Amino acid sequence: MLTISQELADKIVSHARADHPDEACGVIAGREGVPERFIPMENAERSPTFYRFDSMEQFRVWREMDDRDEEPVVIYHSHTATEAYPSRTDVSYASEPNAHYVLVSTREEDEVEFRSYRILDGEISEEEVRFIP
Amino acid sequence: MAIEVRIPTILRNYTDGAKAVDAEGATLDELIANLESRHPGIKDRLVDQGALRRFVNVYLNDEDVRFLGGLGTPVSDGDTVTVLPAVAGG
Image (cartoon, rainbow over all chains, first blue to last red; front, side, top):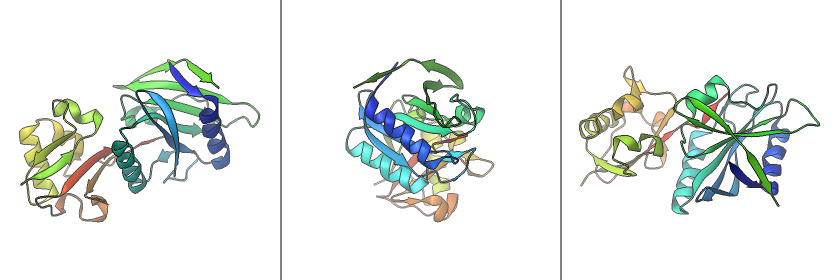
């Protein structure tokens, strides 16, 4: 299960809406599995169907997390025309075994889809999301 | 002295869980060959058909080696090489 503050979840959704129709992506860093620090990332692909963190930005952010004893607790991205479910490419490139992969869909303007998954060895398992104040 | 190689979580099964290991070589290619001799299987996760895998980022100190010289990039004692899988998807 992913437990996340409503404030952080709202930030993910706002980022996804702002970058629509391109996919938005980013990280929430934290310790011991608790998501705390919101880090929106640039989508180096600037694409409605693909995302990739910019390699130098990723390097800086990962080093900063390392220095602060943090981990990428949440890795999020948006789907802009399809449901908030991991695509085949999402599964094949998933490389953080401890992360919650959050998917947001912006296909409906007035409806939020916010779902979370573990992706491990090519297997997707959806998990419950609990929003806390 | 040696070159420190920082290993991402997903490849630590090749390094007995170590976050960083030492290796030697004059180029990145040699360094990875040396790494393979110490941690068999790891090379295949980094290199495919003589080039770095597209979704693996390798950094020499603070630079992405793609902008330096790829596998031919010279490395020397005291350098730090960092491996990070690209975060990407569709």
